[in-house]
Each structure stands twice: as structure tokens, then as C-alpha cells.
Amino acid sequence: MALLGALILAGAADIFYDYTGGAALPHLVVETIVILASIAMMVALATGIWRQNRSNRQLRHELATLEEQAKAAKRSPVMVEARHGFARLIQQQFEEWGLTQTEKEVAMLLIKGLSFKEIAAVRQTLEKTVRQQASSIYRKAGVNGRHAFSAWFIEDFL
Image 1: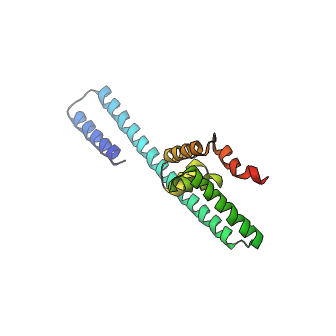
Image 2: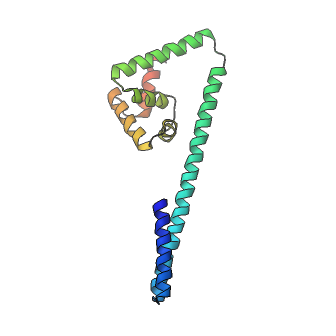
Image 3: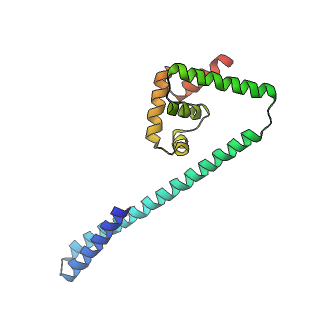
């Protein structure tokens, strides 16, 4: 954004000097169009950044709310033990597959149903990075994708 702003200012100065120097009108029009297009791009970029930050804040808030609800929800002792047992099973399987700590975290978020974009926002990383990590997880697990990965853990319970 700063570089784009500097280019806009430099272009405006160039137009001023060209105008005072008697440059041809078509040349001034072209430079003005370039400056206006640069301003439009800067506004679009700033708007995109603002929207993405707002979306990230909203996702973090939703995640925190869900975590609070999960903690506050009363579960029967049987459900609590089943949940802990299932979590242990998942972690043991992650160990057998040789997942790294980062891959384990991403894998848990995948199992919970978060999208790549949501995982990237929660982990404050790039969506491309999450996709690469997911591909590595699927390869190590011997499955072809997110649905097969999640189903791997559910299949034996049904």
C-alpha cells in the first residue's frame, strides 16, 4: 500500500510537471487515467484488507464462543469418558502416522470441520500453508482427502 501510495504521489507530481512544461493533452490524459486506476486499486486493496481482518476477528470470536459453550455444557460422565477416549485414540493414531505437532493441530481442526480459510485464520497463517499441511496429513494417513480423513475416525464406531 505504501509503495502504491508513493507511486500515486510521484505520478501526480509528474502530471503537474508535464502540465507546466506544456506536455501534449493525450499524454496528460493517459497519465491521469493511470493515477486514477492506481487510486482505485489502493481503495480496493484497503477494503479487502479491512474485510479480511473483520472476518478473522469474527472467526476468532465465534471460536472462543464455541469453546466457552463446550466447557459450559454439562455432559454425563459416560459422554465425558467417551470423548476423552476418542481424543486419546485420535492422538495415538496421529502418533502412528508420524504427524508433526503442527500437523496434529491442523488435523484436529479438519476433523472438527473447519475450512482451510478458517484454519488459516485461527492459526494466523496462509491458507496455502494449511492446504500443504492438509495434503501432508492425507498422504501420511493414506487417504484421498478431507472427507476420507474424517471418515477414517468415524467408520469403526458406526
